[in-house]
Image (tube, rainbow, N blue to C red; front, top):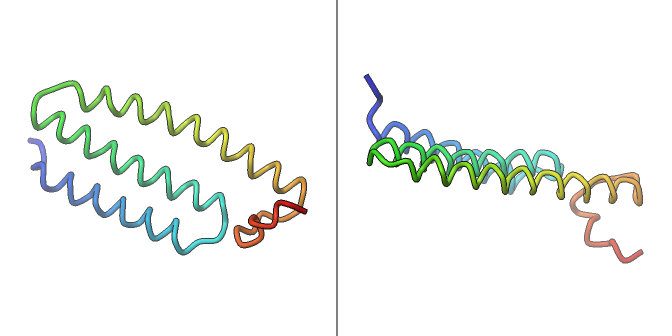
Length: 101
């Protein structure tokens, strides 16, 4: 027996909220990227739950596209973090606005 749609939506909202708080209150860029990934996975859970509830495959197709974009975002983001670390020997988010020097 499947759980009702509301259970999936509550779990998705909880995951999304944890991701928002992780992104807003942490200063480590790696934690910030993990929080963004958590928010994207919460959206994926919502798409899959609604797709299952409505009996359509479009939810899974949307998840495929979101996962593809998330993978590209991680590659570009980690490359930027590595470049900043090599230039400054620090990845503090508060110092990133000083990239001109």
